[in-house]
Image (cartoon, rainbow, N blue to C red; front, top):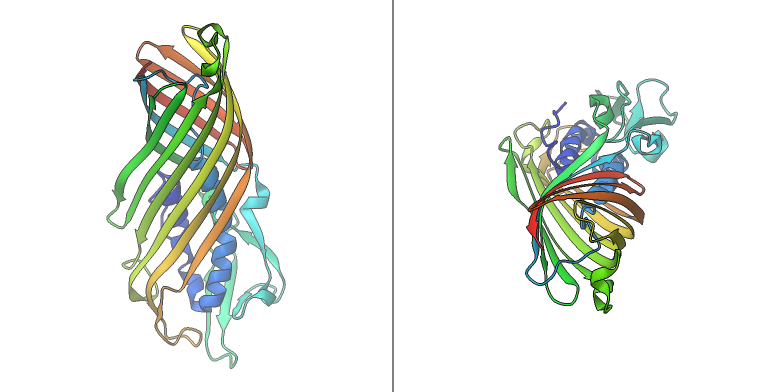
Length: 336
């Protein structure tokens, strides 16, 4: 089984698990696509929530020329999400796939987040002349990993009348010569309290925040594939939006607190690309760019956080409650 070589960022985790789908390909394109959708959907959903966070650490927008540069890390947990760790695989829904033990009977198997191991399946042609057994892939929990990580650089600059612009970025990073990942995003924050004559003496600030994030990754597994072919790779794209209302304390010299309620929505697309050849009865010809796995996710979120300010240096931490809850930590440098 391919090791998780891409643990630094969430798409890397997603693509690392997708490589484990190699064996299922001998069951045919239709079976492989059905299994891949069920297997990868939970980790894709968690990834959408993970990269959508971290857009703000206060509702108090920066004045004209004020700026902040941040290093942000997210850990999106799924330890107690048993419904995301397994799915029911019914052989009746598959053309060629069945279980070695108790064939024909549906049973729970692991998703990319799960820990169910040792599930043996087989594929067989109608004449029973061809048969092949293999083990279904397990998930991240089987390797004692109970969170999806993500991270990026983020900058914020104050404009006029309570408006602040934001941008996030992760330069294209290459791992182990076969995987690449990059991220970019943009956002706006508007502080409504800046419209009030007495805004400088108010103890709280209220803002609206909109943020868009785009994460792309590529994983070339031609050299490690068990299926003959060329240019075999996964292209992954995650696009998310975060719409939030934020309130925070202000004018406290060292420590302030913030919280928000928002709505997160996003979509992931993982494309299996390249050419694939096999000698089995289900895969007797070359197939090019076999299929895509797409997942949409959306839901309400709420968070509470605190920000410690020591001159140009600031630290913030928050906990976001949503379908996939996330802990966010930021190291910030700036001037306001």
